Image (cartoon, one colour):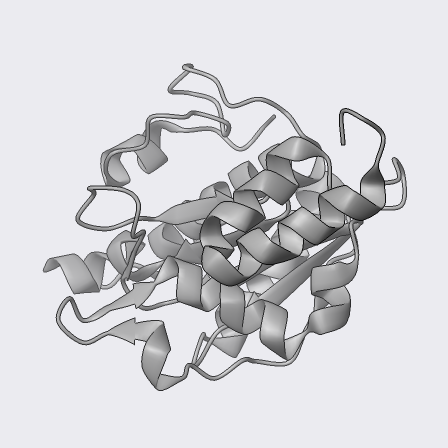
Length: 211
């Protein structure tokens, strides 16, 4: 790419993609092989994964539109496959979930203007991180998966609180919209929706919803 030989760069990329798909994806995101985004032509897509609640999805779309003015495009649900869940951990594999969305919606995967956020109510982890779980994680600058499992008080031994769950989920999705759609940098302000050091639900409850 530095030598302005794009055909040769893509040839080398294809070799790398067969050897190491994850690293190849990072090269695309960081090295300029992907087609550039056209400012002002971005589109935001929500992809419900497996049995994500339709009621939660409707509320989330409405609240995000009210907050941002973005007309979210909701795709049909994508069922998990056997490889999506790590049997030993009993958690969704983030990378497999992203790969599944790309496979199900290849046009979105190929569209540099498509910002795609997958939504799951099952617990999730990220292979390359040492965390026990992840609330959300981005990839390639335009994909993300958000998990509401540990945002739900019921799953953590508390009393049911639908409003609290919705608020936490909304803040996490708004953060991903800010980072991926608007390309705002995360920050260290615990009151900001772009707060970058979320470690537990207590952090969600302190965060605001403004960029």
